Length: 502
Image (cartoon, rainbow, N blue to C red; front, side, top):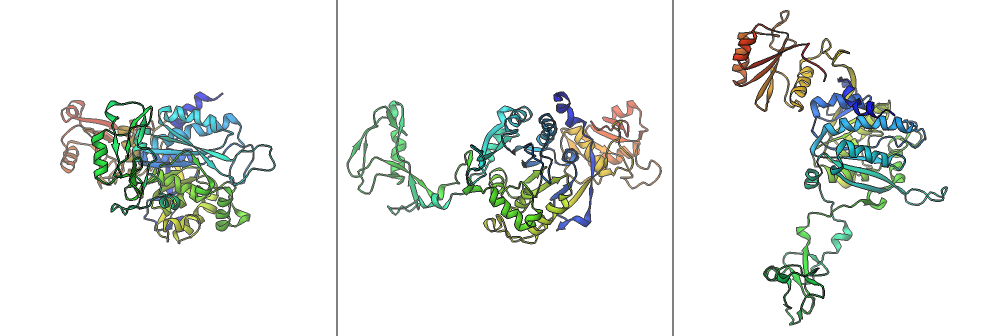
């Protein structure tokens, strides 16, 4: 068993640089979207200084461990290896997730129940939202006496209550809209009605006689009471929100207006007619790459559209660290979300990049017509670079100022650095300012130029930052003694010795 090592694995992953590869950028390279080639464990750790707590929706479709080897994925891991693979990745994904964000993980029965236990531990049982069952087939597998019809999608929130208050409802279907009619020419428009104005139980203030416009009288059925007190009933009636039948003699029914609907709620059973199936996804991928070079286990774009619709809004950040054939990034792009996709194999170039380039060019497959996609946007392509820290946990040579600044800010504040790192003052967090003197940031090109804290330099930092409160300064050396630093309310930390990976 490797449980102890698995639990600690995320902390031991080195921070690495993300090296831009401009020759592989797509479309408008100024876009914030990122396509990263490399091991997703390393890539997720590399993203932390910049995106911790910033991702609104995470979707991953990890190898199902089905004991079959797909061309593009190792789907033949021994059970303990699979658990060891997924645990540290979930830990890092949790750290990247926004407080009102959610994570959606596709899996089948081979590891689905073990995955649920792991996710309970990583995200907390109280943050479990639902186990979505996606009906992936259109019919049974005739080769089996009894076969599976669905995959699981485990859904968790960083904070379940926060997510549930921001989750979007689904758009009403044409069939549901057709249920709204207006037989009485109500000026508020088409409506439908609930079937019963009574509720189970006995409440004295909800027991009264209702006289309909046609003169019929009704009391609550035995064992029930009306759904509102009499004064509320009279308000509904005065506002024309009750229906008594065409002759005015029926038991009241409360109207529900089409123009007041904010959509329909989702539940855990997603049929293939609503969100697609494996045959549909195969057709989509074959149209993009041809059947000879298609990805083995893609998901239909309609399934991803449903997830992103519920879990995010235009402009939100979406992450997929098992990008596969690129479906998540493609649909996120079409739906106006920002996205980060990570894929370790060569098909980051052979599959993901060509697909996203086609999306940018206006590709019309999948959900393009449904979301009104006509093309545009872009992304930047990255590969994993050298470690930011050496084996002893100290910064390595030639690390850029902005990279070190992001890591110092994360280690000190626990939050990502969102501002441009182009001045010594990194920012103020909870009453403490943080400054970094490194790599000639002040424009002094002498041998330690600008990297040594002096009284003059401290005064400059104070003047330019307009901050006179507590300050933590990282630099090569300080010419101010402990007493003067204390008087100035400055905490000095020496680079590289006080800059550590963890």
